[in-house]
Length: 337
Length: 106
Ligand SMILES: Cc1cc2nc3c(=O)[nH]c(=O)nc-3n(C[C@H](O)[C@H](O)[C@H](O)COP(=O)(O)OP(=O)(O)OC[C@H]3O[C@@H](n4cnc5c(N)ncnc54)[C@H](O)[C@@H]3O)c2cc1C
Ligand code: FES
Image (cartoon, rainbow over all chains, first blue to last red; front, side):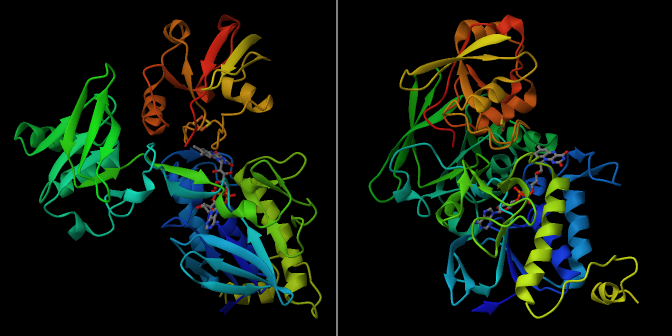
């Protein structure tokens, strides 16, 4: 059981800035995110696209914003628990108990939910009874290449991930690349390499085809694909790799007994507390009158929530409002001499 | 202003009026049309506002740009007449448009 002043759920821009606002007040936090990296929507959906409405930053990309936020919170040496989804939140002896799908457990007086539109998860294949194959014959990511050696692999998708893994796995496996239209989207050199492999007969490309059926009991034996005109084809298959990007799933957050409005959490706009004392929500996931789903709004929200977190984590101390420019204490916390 | 009809995969339908310059997605969300999730708020990053546009209308509308077509690849059961409703902007010309929402969005 890990004890901390605040558990932050979500390492998007708002969760990251929460670390800063808590840190300058002397509070320790941990951040948990289901993604394999920090940055939330900024890093997952638009790393290379420019943002123009961060105050005093005329232009920066989603990745740059994330990198700068990480730089800004470095002094606080905060642990980020990545690839972990928060499953359970419950009250225990006057504190909050938080548990992840990785078995990590936390005890804390405060939780800030900065969960955006939910946790990012791979988009699953749209067929019935797909679950029984998932993790055995159907994968949405390649963790260990070794498991994909000397197999008949069907790769679905038309973007970078599908193309890159086709190239990589074709070195030691028999690959069929399947896409619903003729055009693929990827870097020119990747597209050229794919063409070349196809020309040499080293991979097979099937377009415009979509998955129709999977044959097999416990393991996939073959698949049937179908084109727009209803023509089908059967392919001997051991492994299916599907790369259709990520979806945002609200997931367990809906089960923590908080007052919700559709997929958002209702908060008090004075301190961003939810219907439960000590649980706060900020960023895209919170909802109050006039809410704007902007990064800058999220920054404001965590600044206010952090004050309330301080009062709860340090009930015997008085909260003092301070400027970073003039506060010795804050500068010490930031490691400035 | 245009009247837009949303059908679901089971054939239920609802018609709403949407102001010009809004998108079909925004019209749907404001009128609580089920079956449009629009998780990314219209920034063409989620494909959960996916609709099938009736063929006759599909050919009349401005074509989808590359980014939209790429995103439609990610949608649940894309078809030839798939569009992202956040990329269809209402004009008077679209009065009477009929779209069908997929069985689910993700
Ligand atoms: C294409 C695009 C362009 C945009 N442009 C702008 C712009 O120019 N200006 C602007 O201000 N905003 C813009 N936005 C919106 C902005 O990105 C969001 O407002 C912002 O990302 C919200 O930050 P957040 O930290 O609240 O949530 P998110 O960035 O969504 O991060 C939430 C994180 O929480 C994690 N999470 C959720 N539930 C759990 C759980 N149970 N366990 C573990 N982790 C969990 C998720 O995996 C995710 O990483 C844009 C959005 C998009 C998609
Ligand atoms: S609302 Fe996300 S792509 Fe249209």
